Image 1 (cartoon, rainbow, N blue to C red):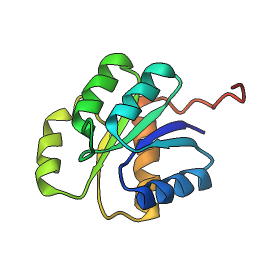
Image 2: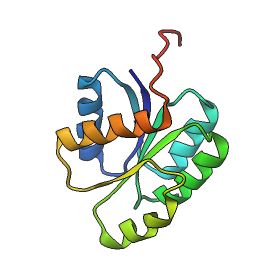
Image 3: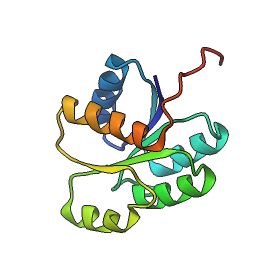
Image 4: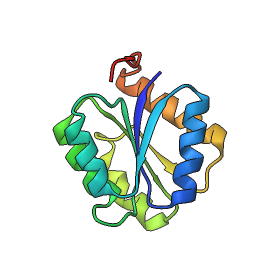
Length: 132
């Protein structure tokens, strides 16, 4: 399955997302803001299949993160999430960079479906290596 980086500032939702992704066999790690996410992407260059990021986060928001991530790894699938209408509007100009926008609140089924679609859209559904 895929290796996924989750950037979400709400701890309870981070845990919920990680559990749902693990149920589908994904190797997911989570960070609490966009700055930590960018650091992880740079440190693990090319080792993530998907970035799942909230738009509204401290340090670096999801849109700035998506722009930086796409610049660093053009093959990375990017799926954004938000519960705010104004943030959805901000993301509307990113169609060329992101594979989708997940609206909060979402169900586990919605999350799993959107993650699978985002990975498939980028063609990055490679098997995760067992090597560290």
